[in-house]
Length: 109
Image 1 (cartoon, rainbow, N blue to C red):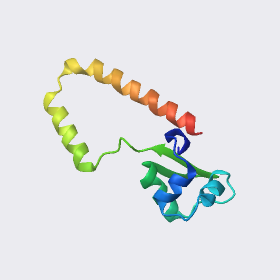
Image 2: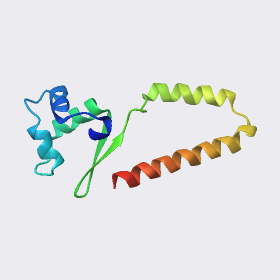
Image 3: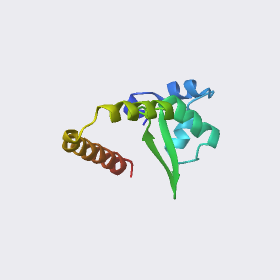
């Protein structure tokens, strides 16, 4: 994820409050696994979610995340405006989002 953002190890280390980039290099080379507090810092700095899985962890983009209150307001606004005529368009949009999600999941596997 760091590379896709064109961020150097040294920059990430600095943003995380680490003294040097060697620890990040060791994580990326799978020499060691980041401690939980460092995983949380990675999530904050890179705006990603880190999810533990068998034999490692999955990193996913979280830049589009919203708070529960923002989500509830958006749902409320949408519900006021929707009609049955909107259903085919919404189904197409849902399907497109699912394809994007599937593509991201395959990319991180």
